[in-house]
Amino acid sequence: MELDRKEHAVSLHKDGYNCAQAVACTYCDLFGIDEETAFCMTEGYGFGCGMQEICGALTGAFAVAGMANSSGNIRRGITKKSTYDITGAMGKKFCEINGSMLCRELRGTPEHPTPKTCGEYIADACQLLEDYLKDAHKGK
Image 1 (cartoon, one colour):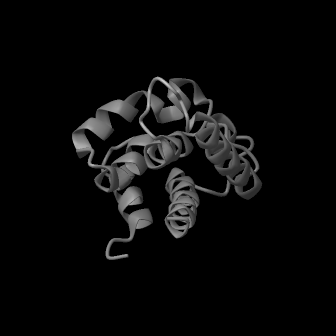
Image 2 (cartoon, rainbow, N blue to C red):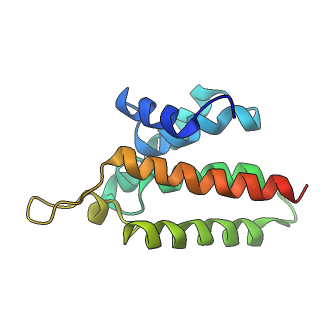
Image 3 (cartoon, rainbow, N blue to C red):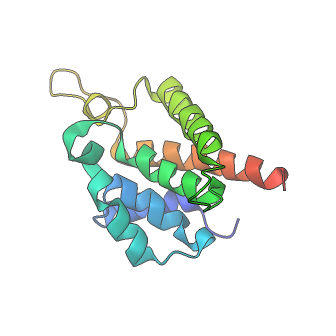
């Protein structure tokens, strides 16, 4: 791969993108989506959707996985279940790696700081996405 997407996503976050934007904008070129659209669509996912719930990096990865897997067939929803299976497996693996998928737990508190930064969670989400995309490409 000519571009290290994990490093790129982390650099976007350092430049002010939220975690979801950093992940989604890093992969938008694979699906014919311009960066501004990806940025706008995922703005509300940062900081755990503004409530410190599901990690923004992970929701950004879910958005990209949906783009990769969806048939785009609105009437039949023929890929909905498989997309849920993919994002469910990604979420489970993210939890195995990090102990949680909740932003408030991942970010920690002054009394219970976490050993990782948001950039490291972004890299983890990108790695899960890379693994999925590589496996999906093998099947085609």
